[in-house]
Length: 67
Image (cartoon, rainbow, N blue to C red):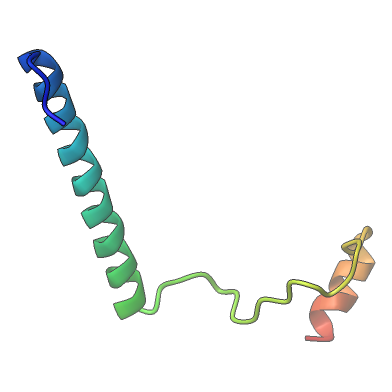
């Protein structure tokens, strides 16, 4: 994967190290979120409730009161 161009090799090294650093950061933030129970407040994921979401404020209130 290395080429004769040392500048290109340096840029590739920086790119790969940046990606590894971001992946480690994502894993750490996810682990911290999991350990502290500070995730999203959505505990149930209803993916296929209906074709169209409630369109009025009253229907939204009715929907969340029925949960």
